Image 1 (spheres, rainbow, N blue to C red):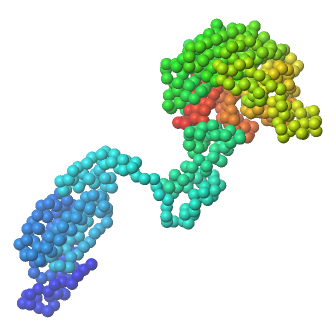
Image 2: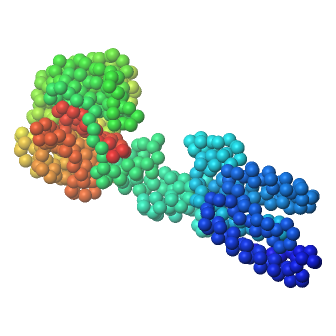
Image 3: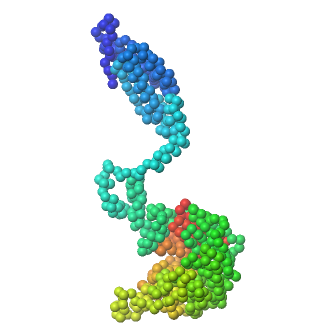
Length: 609
């Protein structure tokens, strides 16, 4: 970076003065660097070059930049046009370097510049580590040059606005040739990656982060996860929520990470039942049904209920939601029908004793009672309370459920306009009509169970010699078949639910959860899970895929099961020893689980553990 020294006038130095000037320049440079090491923060030492006009000038700090610039400019004017231009150029470059250093772009690097014009030689060194935050750099620049001083908060807000207005990340043009492939081909390649690999790939750049958030890449992973909103057949039940977010929450279900809370408390001991619908929670308290609205977090309720539905003289034992109606069963032997968005309420006597269970699908109501009967009712405005069939079960009925599909020919009009349902005789599907004559009788009965959805199942107390699970025909009220043959006496079924027209789940006093598939065998269940502590199972709920939740009779224990394995996945005791209570009812979404006990309504938050 050095330059040759300029020789002085002929009479002052002789022929070798140019070499002496260069040596003198190097020596003065060493002295200047020594001074800078001893006194940081003071003015920078400048060494003149050989010949006339050599001298030492100290470079001022940032606070005295203006004072240093003005005398230097005046000296340039006095020195003549050419010399003034040279000195003026040095001052301008020095000021520009100071501004760049004040704005945080100089960093900790040394910028050394030695001028070969014989007027100045100076070196800029920051002397301290500059803060890279724009707010502090802007304040330092404003102090040095009198500019506008913006605060750090204002600069941060401006940066956020700029980031929000920035267009989406562009696809990388450099790097591996893999990223230059068509997106359809990249989706196919990335579909073979697991969850961990996709997460790491999203950390490469913003474009890949956006690309790996595509629902198609996470759909296969979500179907294999717990409670991700997909059924066993692949139906997406929550299309409004990104699949990637659901997979994240699913890991909390798998690991048992949640936060427990209490939504409601009751003053006296009760046997509540509840149902979920959209952002509302319906829960029974004594002889009332109250509707509450969830707050946006899903883990708390608005204090004031949306509606209160009354009509029973005794406690509400069970209720369901169907077609904007609440169908309730009470301990007074009556069935109540309420419209959710109006004050319309109808109740009628249904059984001689308390009605333990009720279900409603497609304009048909079925009820079971302690008086050892099950009855079929129409949900038609003109014939409410008129019994279609009375079935003698010869045992107390604890649970009941209608098959998910209705037989072809059943009316599908809204309940308020529907006439009396017409249950047409079962017709074989066209592909099987030619095979019916060649099938054995046992296979024909199995086909009837699979393709005839106009049936319902009852779970009884199992006090006789017959099975507690029996399937009945809605059209004739005749017994179609019974499930299982090895139930011990007293193994009553307290809860039963259809998962599909040919599969259902049951639980009860025998401490087992059983999974039945009518396509394989009606005599033996496909799979069963045993409660580890031999507690009665009061209720169950499934996501339609891999997750199963049960409520036990002691200490309010809620258990999570992965249906692909036998052992219990996690257990959550919700009460202590003095307040032991069964879990009478439980419901869950993809983010929360709600359990109704004798004194409290609990929530397990898996989205924000």
